[in-house]
Image 1 (cartoon, one colour):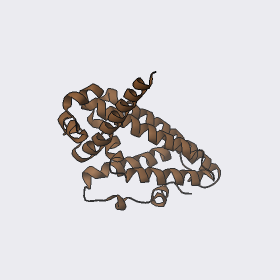
Image 2 (spheres, helix red, strand yellow):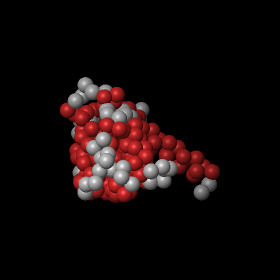
Image 3 (cartoon, one colour):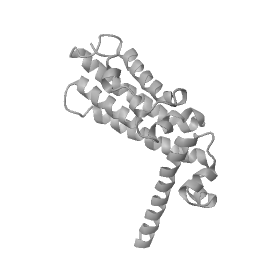
Length: 195
């Protein structure tokens, strides 16, 4: 690739990143359903025609954001397994980092609004759910073996943990007056699993 082509590709990549960055803010503020492509173009400081050079529609923009958020969370879950310490300490690390992600003003709305788009675009979310469940189950089983986690069905415990996080994610619609400081801490969530 020539230097000119490399520079052009870098500019396209930067523009696409700009669109995604501003789109995350718009989707978080207005919701996926209420957002129009013109809203995304305006926020990115470009015409709709230029935005269409990068994305076919708002669903494609949202799908790219969902992919990025899902992949980031998958990487986080896998990183938990590599953390030093006991399985309980690894689970605590993961919980703290998941809660930290929920405190970001744009990340949580991206994942929590996934049901508003076509099911074909939800594949990243399904992949995230599978990986997170398996990592949680692995940490719970290892924690049970060390007497750190309650001796109950690890599948049910992993599901309980996931539902707790999903409920916290969904709180924005039900409890809009709550702030990120109203989220429970990792110890409160893990109390559900502690031996």
